Image 1 (cartoon, rainbow, N blue to C red):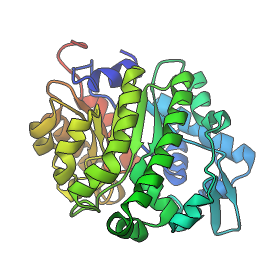
Image 2 (tube, helix red, strand yellow):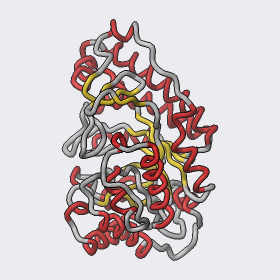
Image 3 (cartoon, rainbow, N blue to C red):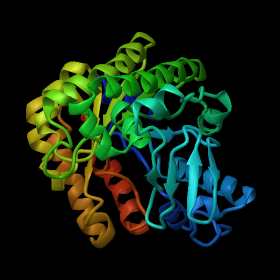
Length: 364
């Protein structure tokens, strides 16, 4: 099977030839750290904002090389070229949100342009641009149909709170629900328009990336989730399915109070199944593994940064033992391959998946 066939079979809750392997998100440091096992011409570890154009393309080429060399079955792309650097600490996206850069991962939203209904009335949101799909276009050309092409799309909750501030958004759910709905409608219309572009560009899997929980419980109550968030994200699922795509829902944290709603929405897969948040893989498999593909669960908080390759191998074997039967399992980490993970542990995860993930049949 090709990587693409493997991913799509697993997301259809059937057994491929082996358990698929996937990287949902990866930062510059592990790309360079893993990449040094494959090539010698990489720059010192730094963020992409500190790289010149040649270094940036070398970083992307190395990411492609990692997927090829370690037989990663799917590749995740996202918008690039939609941000501008304001100064050494801040970047701004095309929605007007300002982010503070961090050496530990993604920039953090710090200034929000739409705090009031008055600001929203005078606001003009951006339009999707085909040139922002460059990362996907390059991956499609590089992999030539051999790997499943994922697209990371921020969902209604994350896009809304980035625009208006998280605390403010939660307050407005009580004080001015029409304002919350108006923002969600605006960002969803943008996402639907971009989805038309992505369908034409040939993606295989849409990721609705919409973190909604911490390790203890969801950030909003289930009834608020059903009112302000999931109806909008459901529109993406319906449209993607109508175009023949698979849809993966991403959220860290404890999703148990929301799991039935997520199942009813019709997602094909759930990621990243954070073990520290009570998302025990065997328990989730028993609850809904015949309805939704489970993607992730290899601990990136303690195990991948601080464990040994042998411990990583054991964790992968356990995950496969717990959830591979019948299909519907894709091995990945429990959030991202962030700057704190050890390259040798990432490689151990890759290699253990192939070592222990063989099915007796072949794509039944």
